[in-house]
Length: 331
Image (cartoon, rainbow, N blue to C red):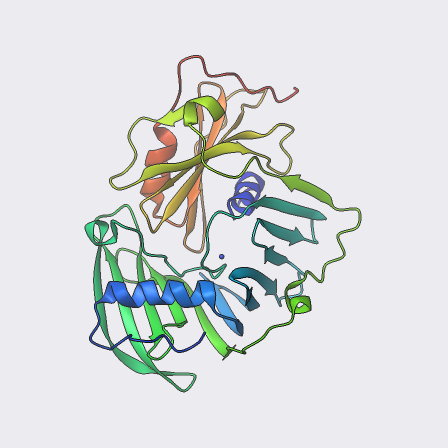
């Protein structure tokens, strides 16, 4: 993966018994209960995250008090990377780069990767199925399959605990049904109380560079970014736009976010290089794909946990709005 794509990917980057949930309930009910448990319960777990040939062990802690949640995700591979999500912001600590990336918190749920959150039009874009599965960590399991109805999105398979709807395992599947990314818990506890100290960062960020994004909330594309996508793949809609700070880029750049209610794609428009256009470039990391091209003197990168053709089609469809301001890179 190129440094450009690594930079963009870094910026684009979340349990008690559930009453009334029955094995015969429809798949969507299982997904909704899963999202509720992830957002509203205390849990502390270890899981393995696998993408391609790379595996990483991580710890996640989720603490809820007075209806407000704080979450901490820690890499145990020796890099020291941590993500802490407060009720207002998400802080990504990157010790190897001495950088802290900060952006507004946009939703509830969990920092867990490969766990989809159901949107209002889920059944229009995906086919859902639930069936019994084998036990995991001593729990009876309900398997929920989320199959895309076209080639623009990935599928998911979730192994949910029958009594909690907690995702004990989750996989992202390509068009042939192959696993391209997954998480699997090796330990999961759901204590009644988690101390506040457990979700505080352990990284000493003294002397680090702090990079913050724009304001919280959605803003019209024309007023913030001055760019639009002529035609997004079916089901994808613009859900947010803002100016985004990127490591190594001297000015904040337009950032457009498209979603189908389950998958999302971020589009970044950077100042073009002084030496002329850069070649079209594709990169893959697990289930995440990135595609970069040059459009009217600007470098456009689309990145998301979607198939290659989706990021390519979105990036290639970017056009400036009438009167869009030029980005000055200071070159």
